Length: 417
Image 1 (cartoon, rainbow, N blue to C red):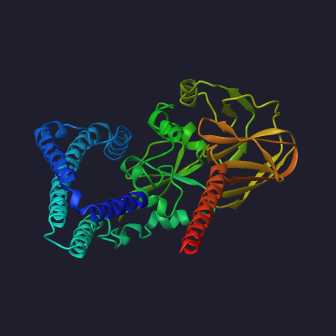
Image 2: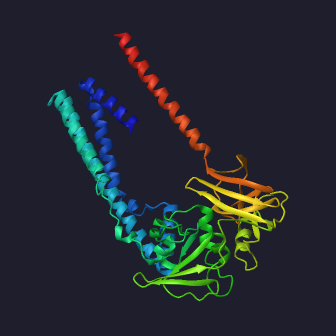
Image 3: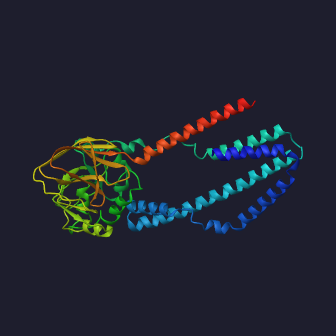
């Protein structure tokens, strides 16, 4: 934005200083504008057939509709929405293109009047300023309207299920089934495996697409391996769920929500008895979908971890839980592997045992794993992305260089005068 304004200023200065010699430039500019306009009109059909939707954006839209409405309806609704979106974006392109040709014509006419000495330099600059400002205001209005929050606060009003869950002081996650899975209102009060945004980390999205709804016990299309290892203590649905794994808690008649407690959920962190080394992504997914896999006893890792033993006496308590830092107080009688029900994200998260950094392993494809030595320890997980600190320093250096150059330029101008 800064560079374009500076270049425009150089252009205006050139026009003012070369008032007598603008005929050739005006002629070529007018011919170029007319040719461009003709091409634009001739290729209307080609432009209208452009996609106007990026591939990753299209995938996110389709995925979101499928999660909300199911496979068949979701695909149909997404197809109609994408069609309307393409048409709307084409109309925006067409309208803005005509607007460009109109403003360009006005500018050429204005320059011609100035070069022909029909108007003075100051009239030329004032009209140029007015037209440019009017153009910018029309564009800015698209972004600076409806600044008031448009969500309905009643949507976030506590219902009976919310109140019960908020009364449980343990750290846990919930699993809203069906169309409620993608409703981000649940994230207003609780930790939900549906998240608060349609776009998710690639690993997590793969688990949702290929594992979460896999039937492993012959009853419900739910992968209890994934549900349990994600620390899902409660499940919410709008009807009765026939499962021995669930314990009925309550029913909210107003909202038509039934709340169930998952009797086999795992805590936020636990020690396992054995490790399975699987490097292939698809093989890991197949293993997670198998009925004989038990995340309470086994952790799947993607690289060699080293020798670990089976702890017999362990104690793990979450003593600090914040957005960018977690702290566990741990006691174990053997060197063991701790599976932590937090999403694996190596681009920033670091682990420290008693202040010393240790590696974080990918466990069960989406979780974190840390090797804990024998004894009592404090495990800290901190989000400290190195790229952030580097970028901050580079930005600061850049600002200082600009300030120094500006001061040097001012000093040079003053000394020259």
